[in-house]
Amino acid sequence: MQSLTNRSENVNRSPMTFAERIYIPEIAKGMAITLKHFFKKKVTVSYPDETRPFSPVFRGLHVLNRDEEGRERCTACGLCAVACPAEAITMEAAERLPGEEHLYREEKYAAKYEINMLRCIFCGLCEEACPKDAIYLSETVTPSDYARKKFIYTKQDMLIPNPVTEPEAYAEALGKNQPTTAGSLK
Ligand code: SF4
Ligand code: SF4
Image (cartoon, rainbow, N blue to C red; front, top):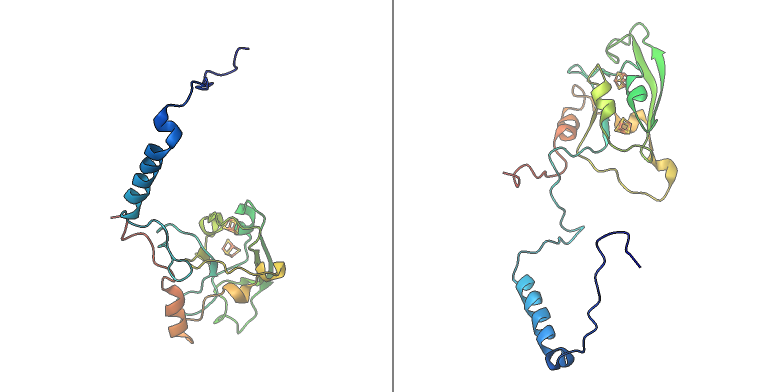
């Protein structure tokens, strides 16, 4: 029967030679390959004691940003939610009241802001869509868990510490949490 592709191969059914029947040459070839790899640099790491450096373009957990005065940047415009291909972002807007100027940068702010991390594909489009520099994807990996509802991240989970009242926590949050491959790519 004619084959559909040209990739078919005929099986060699000729009788085995003496060397093939005793297998010793093939075993020696296999051992040589094993030995060759034995002295090569290991490609595996002992996770979780060791972790691989991340790519410099790694995108991890979202952070809701504040300005230099510690005010929330998000104005609940909804552009990030519209840009999100996974429909993972929901929010509720509220109007800033007199006396809240030190809390919220704009006249409107997100009273509620949630991201469903089980839907999120970490594409970074929300970050690109944001006109207020209010959201970015950090270098922190989303922790695993057994309960689905723990993957609904609220505003409080994502809001960066206040640089005015919590400067140390803010600096730590800005720091890179994971080493990147930037050095190893040189
Ligand atoms: S990273 Fe992508 S999928 Fe995740 S919330 Fe942002 S836009 Fe949606
Ligand atoms: S994070 Fe940015 S794009 Fe999303 S609602 Fe807030 S200001 Fe708008």
